[in-house]
Length: 450
Image (cartoon, rainbow, N blue to C red; front, side):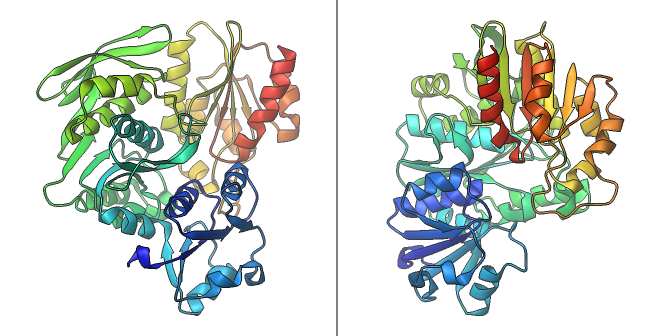
């Protein structure tokens, strides 16, 4: 498809983090953009500030007539949209060009030098580090991020179109539409079993992704994954590895061994060994791309993170409030490791909102084990997202499995009162649902209390 020949782009599900990045891209490239989403959010409001018209009722009448010209309109949708969506069915039934988000990303990146980041965990942070490093090295790059970068206050880094950095999303096998020059895989832990059925099928899909790499392209893999590629890791024998890791003034300082030399004294300000691993693979891909050490060191030291990835909401000598997107047991384990490394002597309250009935069902024991590690646990009801309830799959079931007596199931309306009853020194909000909407209320209440 010749995207340059299209003037109008209409998004169904425009408020999604991946969808909104592509919407921003088209606006930056002179296209007319509009869209639908189920509910208003900070993301949709930010898009409206770019003069994108968005409506929130599934009704063809609300669409500007110029987007109903099938010869000059591309329709982009997310797989999260239900099959009975009337707007999507209208466009499909009337001969419009209708593509999934991943297909459009494949079209955008195909004619570029593409660097793709795959993995069940770490995609967004790694992609944002890599995009930031390339931008700081004056590479003409467009980076599509799965979160809002603290450095750019956006999920799009736009500094030219010769090079693209993208998240290669395994959900719905979306990453198979990409054809990267350089790709990495950070992890292949079981997830999205509602799509794949079992963990082996998920691994097979990642192996299929490696076949999408362009001829003469390169694959980087976290050391230990059952794939052939250039390895990376932390304090191990990988091709690219962090060495001499220490914590100075709350930041990691480390050296990086490459296949050819040793780069000394990188500074990285995000906590957690999982984030350090993300930094190493971003550096490895940037070094392979040809970025110089001095600019990489400066770029990494200036990296601020992604919103809702171990984001400090309150940080004082006596009290800390952190918000994180973690929604898988391994991600919660990583958050626990990071907070205990940074605050080893402090008691921690974790507030968790499970995301999806299927994920809760498939990893119930893993969630219980990871949550039990915290000193206190407040559990919210499951956020359903695109799913209907499954009989017996509830937060009460999860609560019963948590082996820690300091636990309770509460509603969002009770949240602030329960938080105020606790005397912990660190509070975490964790989850991928609408718990993020509660963060500002919690922060306000805690700021007044402290």
